[in-house]
Length: 314
Ligand SMILES: [Zn+2]
Image (cartoon, rainbow, N blue to C red):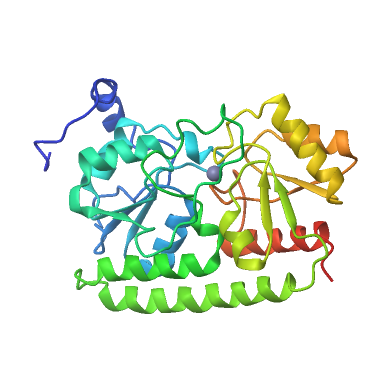
Protein backbone atom coordinates (compact mmCIF):
# COMPACT_ATOMS: atom_id res chain seq x y z
CA UNK A 1 0.00 0.00 0.00
CA UNK A 2 1.37 3.37 -0.89
CA UNK A 3 -0.57 5.07 1.91
CA UNK A 4 0.42 3.34 5.16
CA UNK A 5 -1.40 5.90 7.26
CA UNK A 6 -4.69 5.30 5.51
CA UNK A 7 -7.46 5.04 8.05
CA UNK A 8 -10.50 2.93 7.31
CA UNK A 9 -13.76 2.60 9.13
CA UNK A 10 -14.07 -0.85 10.71
CA UNK A 11 -16.65 -2.27 8.27
CA UNK A 12 -14.52 -0.99 5.44
CA UNK A 13 -11.49 -2.71 6.90
CA UNK A 14 -13.39 -5.97 7.22
CA UNK A 15 -14.44 -5.79 3.60
CA UNK A 16 -11.04 -4.78 2.33
CA UNK A 17 -9.86 -8.26 1.38
CA UNK A 18 -13.13 -8.96 -0.43
CA UNK A 19 -12.87 -5.65 -2.23
CA UNK A 20 -9.38 -6.43 -3.41
CA UNK A 21 -10.41 -9.80 -4.76
CA UNK A 22 -13.63 -8.71 -6.42
CA UNK A 23 -11.98 -6.40 -8.86
CA UNK A 24 -14.92 -4.16 -9.52
CA UNK A 25 -17.76 -2.95 -7.37
CA UNK A 26 -20.18 -1.92 -10.08
CA UNK A 27 -18.94 1.56 -10.87
CA UNK A 28 -16.89 2.59 -13.85
CA UNK A 29 -13.50 1.06 -13.40
CA UNK A 30 -10.06 1.69 -14.76
CA UNK A 31 -8.71 -0.96 -17.04
CA UNK A 32 -6.94 -3.16 -14.56
CA UNK A 33 -5.02 -5.02 -17.23
CA UNK A 34 -1.64 -4.15 -15.81
CA UNK A 35 0.14 -4.64 -19.12
CA UNK A 36 -0.78 -1.17 -20.39
CA UNK A 37 -0.86 1.27 -17.50
CA UNK A 38 -2.67 4.51 -18.18
CA UNK A 39 -0.34 7.44 -18.66
CA UNK A 40 -2.74 10.10 -17.39
CA UNK A 41 -4.11 10.89 -13.96
CA UNK A 42 -6.83 8.93 -12.18
CA UNK A 43 -9.77 11.16 -11.33
CA UNK A 44 -12.49 10.05 -8.92
CA UNK A 45 -15.81 11.85 -9.39
CA UNK A 46 -18.46 11.63 -6.66
CA UNK A 47 -21.39 11.38 -9.09
CA UNK A 48 -22.35 11.63 -12.73
CA UNK A 49 -22.20 15.33 -13.72
CA UNK A 50 -18.75 15.63 -12.15
CA UNK A 51 -17.62 12.50 -14.02
CA UNK A 52 -19.01 13.99 -17.23
CA UNK A 53 -17.09 17.23 -16.69
CA UNK A 54 -13.92 15.28 -15.89
CA UNK A 55 -14.26 13.18 -19.06
CA UNK A 56 -14.78 16.24 -21.23
CA UNK A 57 -11.82 18.07 -19.69
CA UNK A 58 -9.24 15.35 -19.10
CA UNK A 59 -9.67 13.36 -22.27
CA UNK A 60 -8.95 9.70 -23.05
CA UNK A 61 -5.59 9.46 -21.28
CA UNK A 62 -7.19 10.03 -17.89
CA UNK A 63 -8.97 7.31 -15.95
CA UNK A 64 -12.33 8.54 -14.62
CA UNK A 65 -14.03 6.67 -11.79
CA UNK A 66 -17.64 7.57 -10.93
CA UNK A 67 -18.47 6.59 -7.34
CA UNK A 68 -22.26 6.62 -7.90
CA UNK A 69 -23.33 3.66 -10.08
CA UNK A 70 -26.03 4.17 -12.74
CA UNK A 71 -29.50 3.90 -11.21
CA UNK A 72 -28.33 4.64 -7.67
CA UNK A 73 -29.71 7.55 -5.66
CA UNK A 74 -26.74 9.89 -5.28
CA UNK A 75 -27.69 11.62 -2.00
CA UNK A 76 -27.73 8.30 -0.11
CA UNK A 77 -24.61 6.80 -1.63
CA UNK A 78 -22.67 4.42 0.55
CA UNK A 79 -19.10 3.58 -0.37
CA UNK A 80 -17.51 0.17 -0.66
CA UNK A 81 -14.07 -0.45 0.77
CA UNK A 82 -12.75 -0.54 -2.76
CA UNK A 83 -14.19 2.91 -3.46
CA UNK A 84 -12.61 4.29 -0.30
CA UNK A 85 -9.31 2.90 -1.55
CA UNK A 86 -9.90 4.53 -4.94
CA UNK A 87 -10.35 7.88 -3.20
CA UNK A 88 -7.13 7.30 -1.28
CA UNK A 89 -5.20 6.47 -4.46
CA UNK A 90 -6.67 9.03 -6.88
CA UNK A 91 -4.73 11.96 -8.29
CA UNK A 92 -7.81 14.16 -8.04
CA UNK A 93 -11.15 13.70 -6.24
CA UNK A 94 -14.13 15.80 -7.38
CA UNK A 95 -17.01 16.26 -4.96
CA UNK A 96 -19.58 18.68 -3.56
CA UNK A 97 -19.46 18.90 0.24
CA UNK A 98 -22.83 18.46 1.90
CA UNK A 99 -24.33 16.48 -0.97
CA UNK A 100 -23.17 12.94 -0.15
CA UNK A 101 -22.21 12.45 3.51
CA UNK A 102 -20.34 9.18 2.84
CA UNK A 103 -18.17 10.89 0.23
CA UNK A 104 -17.51 13.85 2.54
CA UNK A 105 -16.26 11.50 5.22
CA UNK A 106 -14.03 9.50 2.90
CA UNK A 107 -12.63 12.65 1.29
CA UNK A 108 -11.83 14.13 4.67
CA UNK A 109 -10.04 10.98 5.80
CA UNK A 110 -8.34 9.93 2.56
CA UNK A 111 -8.01 12.64 -0.05
CA UNK A 112 -6.14 15.51 1.59
CA UNK A 113 -5.12 18.20 -0.86
CA UNK A 114 -6.04 15.99 -3.83
CA UNK A 115 -9.71 16.81 -3.20
CA UNK A 116 -11.45 19.50 -5.23
CA UNK A 117 -14.70 21.01 -4.01
CA UNK A 118 -16.09 21.89 -7.44
CA UNK A 119 -18.37 24.60 -6.03
CA UNK A 120 -15.47 26.75 -4.87
CA UNK A 121 -15.83 29.19 -7.78
CA UNK A 122 -19.65 29.12 -7.84
CA UNK A 123 -21.91 31.45 -5.92
CA UNK A 124 -24.23 29.13 -4.00
CA UNK A 125 -27.95 29.69 -3.72
CA UNK A 126 -29.29 29.52 -0.18
CA UNK A 127 -30.76 26.18 0.86
CA UNK A 128 -34.48 26.95 0.65
CA UNK A 129 -36.66 26.82 3.70
CA UNK A 130 -40.18 25.64 3.08
CA UNK A 131 -41.71 25.38 6.48
CA UNK A 132 -41.63 21.62 6.93
CA UNK A 133 -39.51 21.18 10.00
CA UNK A 134 -39.43 17.40 9.61
CA UNK A 135 -37.64 17.50 6.28
CA UNK A 136 -34.14 18.67 5.87
CA UNK A 137 -32.93 18.76 9.45
CA UNK A 138 -29.86 16.69 8.81
CA UNK A 139 -29.19 17.52 5.19
CA UNK A 140 -26.25 19.33 3.72
CA UNK A 141 -24.71 20.32 7.00
CA UNK A 142 -21.30 20.80 5.44
CA UNK A 143 -22.31 23.13 2.61
CA UNK A 144 -23.81 26.47 3.36
CA UNK A 145 -26.22 26.41 0.45
CA UNK A 146 -28.00 24.40 -2.22
CA UNK A 147 -25.60 21.77 -3.65
CA UNK A 148 -27.39 21.16 -6.99
CA UNK A 149 -25.14 23.53 -8.97
CA UNK A 150 -24.76 21.28 -12.06
CA UNK A 151 -28.29 21.98 -13.31
CA UNK A 152 -27.13 25.33 -14.66
CA UNK A 153 -24.94 24.52 -17.70
CA UNK A 154 -22.80 27.61 -17.09
CA UNK A 155 -21.86 26.19 -13.69
CA UNK A 156 -20.70 23.06 -15.51
CA UNK A 157 -18.41 25.28 -17.60
CA UNK A 158 -17.02 26.78 -14.38
CA UNK A 159 -16.47 23.31 -12.94
CA UNK A 160 -14.58 22.33 -16.10
CA UNK A 161 -12.30 25.32 -15.65
CA UNK A 162 -11.59 24.36 -12.04
CA UNK A 163 -10.72 20.81 -13.06
CA UNK A 164 -8.38 22.05 -15.79
CA UNK A 165 -6.68 24.42 -13.35
CA UNK A 166 -5.98 21.55 -11.00
CA UNK A 167 -4.66 19.38 -13.84
CA UNK A 168 -2.35 22.10 -15.12
CA UNK A 169 0.41 20.85 -12.86
CA UNK A 170 0.24 17.40 -14.47
CA UNK A 171 2.29 18.08 -17.57
CA UNK A 172 1.20 14.91 -19.39
CA UNK A 173 -2.33 16.21 -19.95
CA UNK A 174 -2.21 19.91 -19.09
CA UNK A 175 -2.70 20.99 -22.71
CA UNK A 176 -5.47 18.43 -23.25
CA UNK A 177 -7.25 19.66 -20.14
CA UNK A 178 -7.02 23.30 -21.16
CA UNK A 179 -8.56 22.52 -24.55
CA UNK A 180 -11.12 20.18 -22.97
CA UNK A 181 -12.29 22.87 -20.56
CA UNK A 182 -12.55 25.35 -23.41
CA UNK A 183 -14.59 22.90 -25.52
CA UNK A 184 -16.81 22.08 -22.53
CA UNK A 185 -17.44 25.80 -21.97
CA UNK A 186 -18.46 26.21 -25.62
CA UNK A 187 -20.80 23.25 -25.43
CA UNK A 188 -22.35 24.43 -22.14
CA UNK A 189 -22.80 27.96 -23.48
CA UNK A 190 -24.63 26.55 -26.51
CA UNK A 191 -26.86 24.49 -24.20
CA UNK A 192 -27.50 27.55 -22.04
CA UNK A 193 -28.48 29.57 -25.12
CA UNK A 194 -30.89 26.81 -26.18
CA UNK A 195 -32.50 26.82 -22.73
CA UNK A 196 -32.71 30.61 -22.61
CA UNK A 197 -34.37 30.79 -26.02
CA UNK A 198 -36.66 27.83 -25.31
CA UNK A 199 -37.94 29.28 -22.04
CA UNK A 200 -38.12 32.95 -23.02
CA UNK A 201 -41.89 32.82 -23.51
CA UNK A 202 -43.53 30.53 -20.94
CA UNK A 203 -46.87 31.37 -19.36
CA UNK A 204 -46.33 29.36 -16.16
CA UNK A 205 -43.29 30.45 -14.18
CA UNK A 206 -43.71 28.24 -11.10
CA UNK A 207 -41.92 24.91 -11.39
CA UNK A 208 -43.43 22.31 -9.04
CA UNK A 209 -40.93 19.46 -8.57
CA UNK A 210 -40.68 16.44 -6.30
CA UNK A 211 -37.44 17.50 -4.63
CA UNK A 212 -35.64 20.82 -4.65
CA UNK A 213 -32.92 19.97 -7.15
CA UNK A 214 -33.76 22.66 -9.68
CA UNK A 215 -32.96 25.90 -7.89
CA UNK A 216 -30.05 26.83 -10.17
CA UNK A 217 -31.98 25.93 -13.32
CA UNK A 218 -34.98 27.93 -12.14
CA UNK A 219 -32.84 30.93 -11.27
CA UNK A 220 -31.07 30.83 -14.63
CA UNK A 221 -34.21 30.73 -16.77
CA UNK A 222 -36.71 32.81 -14.83
CA UNK A 223 -38.65 30.15 -12.95
CA UNK A 224 -39.52 29.82 -9.28
CA UNK A 225 -39.02 26.34 -7.88
CA UNK A 226 -41.47 24.79 -5.48
CA UNK A 227 -40.25 21.44 -4.13
CA UNK A 228 -42.76 19.04 -2.62
CA UNK A 229 -39.99 17.46 -0.52
CA UNK A 230 -36.87 19.27 0.60
CA UNK A 231 -33.38 19.25 -0.86
CA UNK A 232 -33.10 15.49 -0.42
CA UNK A 233 -35.36 13.21 -2.50
CA UNK A 234 -35.79 10.85 0.44
CA UNK A 235 -37.32 13.49 2.72
CA UNK A 236 -40.93 12.48 3.34
CA UNK A 237 -43.28 15.46 3.04
CA UNK A 238 -45.85 15.86 5.81
CA UNK A 239 -49.62 15.85 5.09
CA UNK A 240 -49.60 19.58 5.86
CA UNK A 241 -46.90 20.13 3.26
CA UNK A 242 -48.82 18.10 0.64
CA UNK A 243 -51.95 20.15 1.30
CA UNK A 244 -49.96 23.37 1.02
CA UNK A 245 -48.49 22.30 -2.34
CA UNK A 246 -51.89 21.19 -3.66
CA UNK A 247 -53.38 24.56 -2.75
CA UNK A 248 -50.48 26.33 -4.47
CA UNK A 249 -50.99 24.22 -7.62
CA UNK A 250 -54.71 25.04 -7.76
CA UNK A 251 -54.28 28.73 -6.94
CA UNK A 252 -51.55 29.30 -9.53
CA UNK A 253 -52.88 27.33 -12.50
CA UNK A 254 -50.02 24.81 -12.45
CA UNK A 255 -50.67 22.12 -15.08
CA UNK A 256 -47.69 19.81 -14.61
CA UNK A 257 -46.00 18.30 -11.53
CA UNK A 258 -42.52 16.98 -12.23
CA UNK A 259 -41.09 13.84 -10.73
CA UNK A 260 -37.72 12.32 -11.35
CA UNK A 261 -36.14 9.32 -12.96
CA UNK A 262 -34.49 7.69 -9.96
CA UNK A 263 -37.06 8.38 -7.25
CA UNK A 264 -40.49 6.90 -6.51
CA UNK A 265 -43.07 9.16 -8.24
CA UNK A 266 -45.72 8.52 -5.54
CA UNK A 267 -45.52 11.96 -3.92
CA UNK A 268 -45.78 13.87 -7.21
CA UNK A 269 -48.64 11.58 -8.31
CA UNK A 270 -50.48 12.23 -5.05
CA UNK A 271 -50.42 15.98 -5.62
CA UNK A 272 -51.28 15.58 -9.29
CA UNK A 273 -54.27 13.34 -8.55
CA UNK A 274 -55.57 15.79 -5.98
CA UNK A 275 -55.28 18.82 -8.25
CA UNK A 276 -55.96 17.44 -11.72
CA UNK A 277 -52.47 18.36 -12.89
CA UNK A 278 -50.46 16.06 -15.15
CA UNK A 279 -47.11 14.53 -14.23
CA UNK A 280 -43.93 14.59 -16.29
CA UNK A 281 -40.30 13.60 -15.75
CA UNK A 282 -37.67 16.21 -15.03
CA UNK A 283 -34.27 14.63 -14.46
CA UNK A 284 -32.08 16.23 -11.75
CA UNK A 285 -29.05 14.46 -13.23
CA UNK A 286 -27.84 13.15 -9.92
CA UNK A 287 -27.10 9.97 -11.85
CA UNK A 288 -27.99 8.46 -15.20
CA UNK A 289 -30.68 5.77 -15.29
CA UNK A 290 -29.30 2.27 -15.72
CA UNK A 291 -28.72 1.49 -19.37
CA UNK A 292 -29.32 5.06 -20.48
CA UNK A 293 -27.64 5.87 -23.77
CA UNK A 294 -26.84 9.57 -23.71
CA UNK A 295 -25.09 12.09 -21.53
CA UNK A 296 -25.46 15.35 -19.62
CA UNK A 297 -26.35 17.26 -22.78
CA UNK A 298 -29.02 14.84 -24.00
CA UNK A 299 -30.68 14.74 -20.57
CA UNK A 300 -30.71 18.53 -20.38
CA UNK A 301 -32.27 18.72 -23.84
CA UNK A 302 -34.95 16.23 -22.77
CA UNK A 303 -35.52 18.36 -19.66
CA UNK A 304 -35.95 21.44 -21.82
CA UNK A 305 -38.58 19.67 -23.94
CA UNK A 306 -40.46 18.66 -20.76
CA UNK A 307 -40.37 22.17 -19.33
CA UNK A 308 -41.51 23.71 -22.62
CA UNK A 309 -44.45 21.31 -22.76
CA UNK A 310 -45.38 21.65 -19.09
CA UNK A 311 -44.95 25.38 -18.54
CA UNK A 312 -46.88 26.74 -21.50
CA UNK A 313 -43.82 27.88 -23.47
CA UNK A 314 -44.27 29.05 -27.02
ZN1 LIG B 1 -30.86 16.33 -4.87
